[in-house]
Length: 168
Image 1: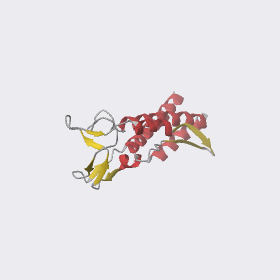
Image 2: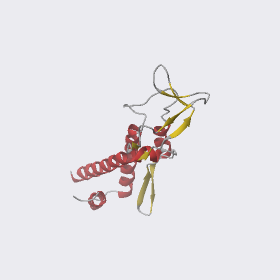
Image 3: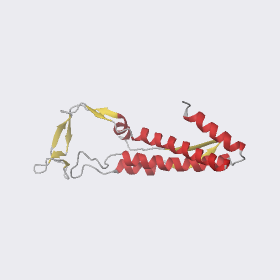
Image 4: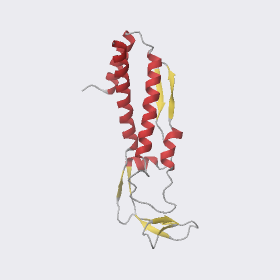
C-alpha cells in the first residue's frame, strides 16, 4: 500500500502531464478538504449527540466552535507548497483529544443536583465536590485524528476525480 504523499504526487504528476494548472488545483482541493476536516472535528468534539454527562452551566460547546475560528481553511501558497491549518486553541483541547489521567481533587463550585443527580456548576461559586474518585483515566475523543483522516480521504478522491475528468 502506497503512502498518502506518494499517491498525491502521482495524481499531481498525471494532472501536470495533462497540462493542468497544478497550483490552482492544489489550492482548491486543499481548501475543500480542510473545510471538510473542520466539519468532522466539530462533529466529533463534545458536547455532541451522545452527551453522557449533562447539567446546568457545565457544557458550553466552546471547544467545538473554536475549530472553525482557529483553523486556516483558505490556502496559502508559498514555494510550491500549499498550506492550510486545522487548529483548536482552547487550553484543554489536547486533553479532550488525547485523553488524560484523572487525579482525585476538589473542584470548587461543582455540585450534584439533589433532584436530578446531574453535575452542575453553582452560579455563585459555592459548594464543591471531590472528583476523580471513580475514574482514573478519561479516554480521548481523537477529533483531530478523525479530521485528518477525512482530509486525506477528500484529497485522494478529489485528485482522482480531477484526473478522471482530464482523461475523458
